[in-house]
Image (cartoon, rainbow, N blue to C red; front, side, top):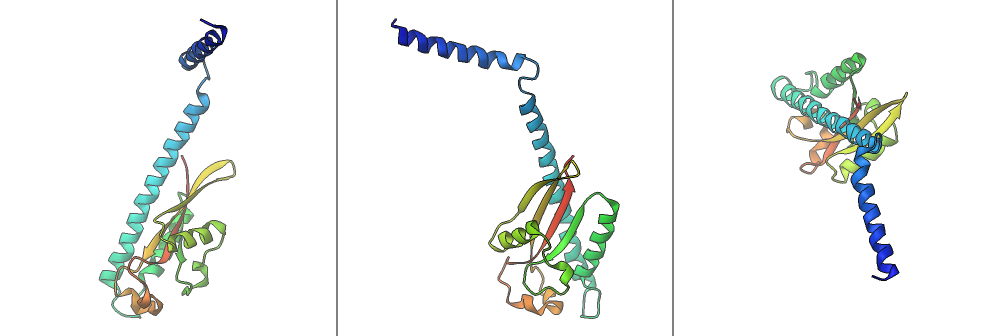
Length: 181
């Protein structure tokens, strides 16, 4: 065997020894284990946001369906905003209703920061989900946004500008900020 082939064979053997032995050294994969642990926490947090999103959107549809019959009734969106403010005071997570139509009924429903502005833009372009992981006060948080399309004809009663919305076009969004645990 010539010296080049021998050098290549020795290099391959050394690489195999290192690869096979690495898991047995303390701390060898600590960074990988920590990353997987964090990824599991992020995955759990995404699932929590999806669950909350389903609950909140279902509540708005049910309120509109059963309790909003004319313009003088309390709009489901107003009830949802009151709910979101109460939940936010509890400290478990924050959720905001965002306008995506360009004609908000209230200015407080406009996108306030770069994340919310990017989310509205991406959701309007067809994305089903927009997210960003941030650090605040040494803790990780998931920021996520989901689209709100017009799902009931009754919505147009209070939001005349929604009458021209295309099927599944987001006219709003829910913006979540939730700790990753």
